[in-house]
Length: 256
Image (cartoon, rainbow, N blue to C red; front, side, top):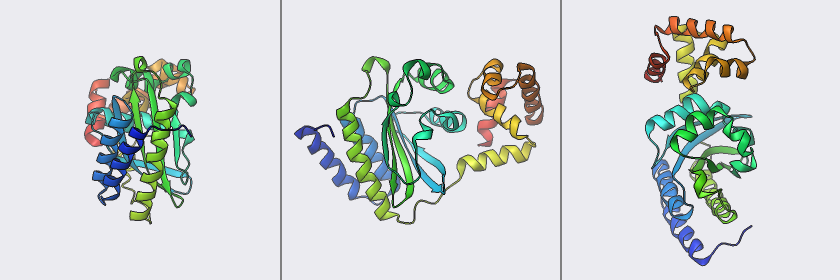
């Protein structure tokens, strides 16, 4: 583990004293985000809650001090399922990672999540962690910054390792049975599918459209022809009673 400075340890100690003194979920997360801002320079961050059942993981109720509600909503509605860091997570294992360890710059820049969500916000590099204790998932904390600021350093990685270990312990001791899933994403999916009688493929296409993908990109991602994509898009438009992609986005966000 990279050696931290005396000043860094002092700042971490002050943060952890405040965290351990709180038994409120939102306050603990707010304190962690505020503390991380002083310890690891970044421009965007969020802290969500998590729950797991078997190998299935669910993340919900994100909070942020520097991201808009729309930015968060777009991630969870359109990009979380295809996030290239998602495969790293294990339900019972606390993990700290740099996304540069997961994908090359070239691969990152070719993803929809980068082109349509990260790049417009001016973020490039990510440093994150999952929080687990006693075989249970409690959430994740993710920090982002722009390309000009450079990738997150080994020292910054080490800071998050310390915070992740203590946050996992604190969550596990306060809520030993785990957090109750609110199933926000699943509820939104079920509502759309059932209310508008969408097929599984139509819902996949809907998600891609909400993520800003063009028909050609959707066709490549789903291994279908552009003509098939057009048919699914037209069917989704008809079922949801909209005439454009902008109207579709508005309708989906209203439903969720």
